[in-house]
Amino acid sequence: MISEISVDEETIEPGIVVEADSRSNPLLVDCGAGTIYRLAQAGFDITCFDTVLLTHHHLDYVADLPSLLKARWPQDSSTGMIADPPGTREYLSAFLDIDLLLERLDVPFREYDSSQSTLCGFDIETCETIHSASGFAYRIDDVFTFSGDTVVSESVARFADGSSVLVHDCAYYDEEEMNHATPHQLGQTLADVDIDDFYLAHFYPDAAANADAMRRTVSEYVPATVHIPADLETIQIQASE
Ligand SMILES: [Zn+2]
Image 1: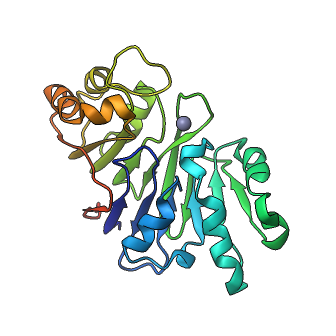
Image 2 (image 1 turned 45 degrees about the horizontal axis):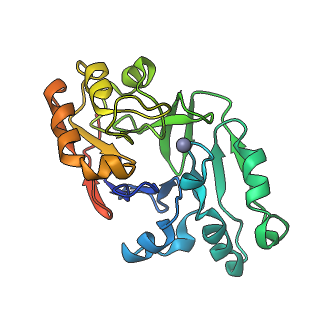
């Protein structure tokens, strides 16, 4: 069961915490710049994250990883597993070499070799995204789907069908952009997808300036309640039976 999801998505650097009452360690999904600061603001001990699940390797999704990993070093504890899309290990190995982190820490990378897995006690399903880097959308415990960065796609729409909550890239207000979703395309493609609450996220500046118009546009197509998440917002989700 997922009981709480803390969303730090209003700005363009994502970091999402997934928690359940009955499980000791929360799961961190992505770790963009500012995540460490927001986790502290939200009252988390940042050394409690032993698993980071990455949608893809772009800097705005991994920028705070070195700081998160180094925070666990004084504990002399095994350091977080990073579950990642194919190819991410190579990119992150160079990135995490700063401050000799990879020499100091045993950082177990894990690449998915199947479409379903379990992390921190959560059931994780994956769906390939369409973006300028290889990546995954994730569906967690069947009730929460996060798209990561992706254009609007039928495969991600079908993947999310039946989720209670979907957080989806909607980076651009303009309809001509590549590699990310835009509101008309998103609304049209997900019009018949069964979702209770639909969060638009990862706003670039033009989108941020037009957030409410984007929310209204998507609402014209989909029956779900469409939201614009705020930093530090917590979303409670009931378990699916
Ligand atoms: Zn990206």
